[in-house]
Image (cartoon, rainbow, N blue to C red; front, side, top):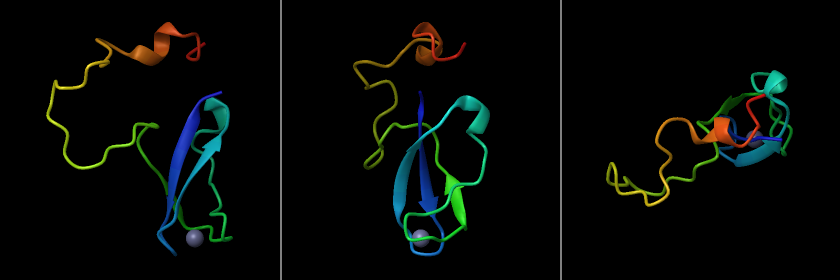
Length: 71
Ligand SMILES: [Zn+2]
């Protein structure tokens, strides 16, 4: 099951949920109970500005769809 990262706009907390793709766009509630959250892009944790093309394991064309998680 894919993981989705969310960020709470009320307290700034980030949290991760595992849900089906059908639920990917459903509203998520912050662990602190705040309903005002936004979904972040994928599960890739980007700390700082990584150089483009420098990722050693960068998939060439949709890495997710090779593992069966895309149906
Ligand atoms: Zn919150």
